[in-house]
Length: 476
Image 1 (cartoon, rainbow, N blue to C red):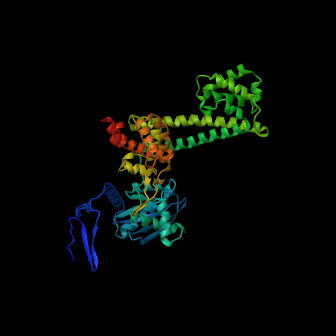
Image 2: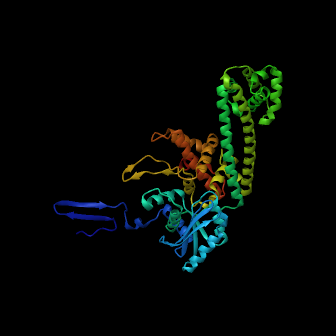
Image 3: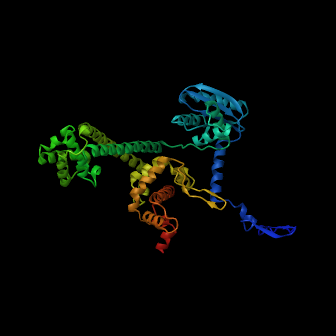
């Protein structure tokens, strides 16, 4: 047998009647096989941080949270149940349970207790505060990990609170958990403002679509009066408001008063919709539309009355949205991040605040890629051996963050040269060009990386560095 040449990582095999075969490993030298990638180092650091919260000397208190019936088990790291409790109490009353679990763990020889639970509604936050008040560590289990654990338990999707509490403790012991976000009042305020803004944006969009559908059915002439701007025109909105208020769902009644009276009423209503300058062309077109009978006659009066009510709701929603966005910008100023984030061309202060409201403090992420993965915009590889499947975004992560970044791209793309050049490259390259949606998703991930760099490094946006090799070549 020939001695293996370790320096080249080559094995020579001899077989009777066969020529010698040479098997070469990917590593040129043995030493390269021990090198760790940056991802390996970050993963190891994350596991070390989790192990510090779930040390082997601690017992694990797994709690399956509910409204008033809480199931909890005290387990060791081999998932042996040491004590079980079934408590009829609200989440705020679980301090007694934590005290008893700690006393029981110390009695059994453990140093302390690590609390583990699923992020159920708001209750995990209450338990987290109770644990911090007692100096106890707490980790959370992803609901998806719980679902997979139930299937692995007995190959079914059966669920009971008693079994789930054990699975929670088991996953925590195996470090299949994460550290819940611990935010201060400023970041907490931004988080809730972002949630409020999201609700108002959805409500505003729903109201606009509802009005469009109703008008298209019973009064299409109103939509044709300003086809290019419609709901973005304060003059058009004031015209609709006057037509529906004055005619009580019958615009022809307002038409009988004449164009002068109609124009005067519209001018008076214009400030309610944030308008300053009256667009006479739209007023004239809307005056003609007042007498247009086109539409479903049997539903017209009722539908237009309904449009009037929805219009008032939408106006109040837009006013509330403006107020909330101003509060978000104020919080951004309080954090000292507004000037840094708006240095990215095309990114508004509101768009940046919406992204940070979903992401939280970026210092908690070890790398920009971690933020992208948190949003679900990271590519999902599908490879095995020499096979390489289609790569798509993972879609796993915080959907609100993904949506905020996606919306920000639409405003930033026309005004950001780096994004514009990258979009053109991705959609026109000869090798595997991307569709519009795929390219925008890639740009959204790039925007998140830029935001991470700007915030964590406290440096304004640099177009040359953000553009990578392409921009460096142009600069040279």
